[in-house]
Image (cartoon, rainbow over the protein chains, first blue to last red):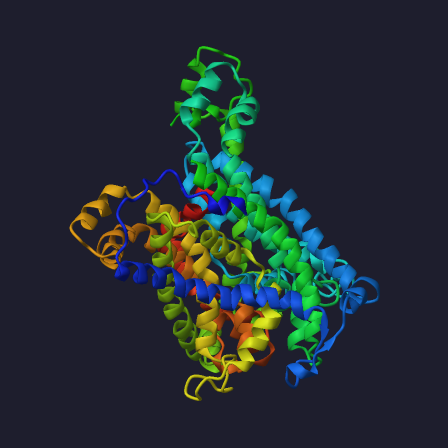
Length: 310
Length: 309
């Protein structure tokens, strides 16, 4: 946090003082939105951590809260049967997002960055799923993978009663159906980010590399990849955050049960379910929060540190 | 242009560059292979959408008779009219508009003010503010929902603003959380953008005695129009597409925005895949407008945020 004390050197130090009115105006302009963000995002984030050490049904006032110490966490890590599959699925989601959309999005961006005919049309089609909501992607998952009425089973001849593949109901299959559709959307997103990054790679450097006899791979490895570093960081963050946020698709299909458990659906089930367990849900949320902050805080720190130095 | 020299070269060992140049004019066999690959990928990519569109145009009776992957029977818009009328979709579109438009405008307004303070001044707190806003936007919603939900059901609202008498189950509540959450991203993008406006632009006004508010309102904000347009497109899509906040914070089904409402309506009104397809297509219309008309703005909004990274 030491960087906070560094004032950005790139902007000239103002010699003039602000008038009282200006001071008040600037404080309000930044203060009100800041208050909103603190009250509705950061206060709940802190409260999540605090509540995780209590037992509370949420009914009745704060007086019904009972200190629970680490009991909620103990239950989660030892006997809560939904937790291991949820963590497993979140991890699987993360791994798949790193292994498929990230490199494939980069590859597509590299190809589309070449001046080829129809590049814009290809780009648009691959980008289409990005504007659709994840909830809608959930519905499309049902359309595409529906056992009897779905596209996949009908195309492969598995829609009949004898050899039916239950893509959505089979708990060891349905996560893959969901992941295929999640990848479908994520790839276009990553591709667009990389395309923007590639536009900023100095073309004369690539020209020089090819004149020096570098092949496509060498030019990529030594010219393009290093120049993409800032975008790579963004893609890593987007990949991690999107995998932790995953919720809508599985919630549409079966509310995140039976093979589709995720941390996010467990948290939701524990507050809007019939038995609301605020403390327990908060402990789950704290785990999610800690994992996300482990990525988010270094990212914003690096980003803005660099900002003040440049 | 020069990027084209990298295409379709099996071995680029020729140091004189002649091969590279000739490839710019003449498509080699590898270039055809690349096109084949891209066409194949695009066919796979658009298949789910085309399948939904195709299914939505066929009456259920025909698909039941011929199967879903088939040609034949009649094609019409009856699924669309059924979905539109029976499930009262106009009501949910209205809800979406009531939430999305104010949330979008307030978000851009607040974010532009914060960005002005952060990007055009050098207060020591600026860096911390940027971190608070940006990091806040990156938190998973589910990580903060439990206390937020408790907070919402304790904050009282007058009856005309909320059916429940509290911030939950109200349009205002949804607008507030969208604003609080999305401001972070917009501050990040707008402050990057405002930094590219030269100091001299506001310096002259300052010398003339223009207040900070006037500098913001009359000089900096108008210059930000392209960034604001890009962000408006992006934020419209994101807020309209929201499913989680509306599902948890809006219990009354009739008050839900359309993206979240579709989930309730399925099973209740939309019993077969033909109707679900038609309803999905209808719900997708505003985002498809973004796709067809405002794609450039959407993409530049995304990449304005990313390219600075």
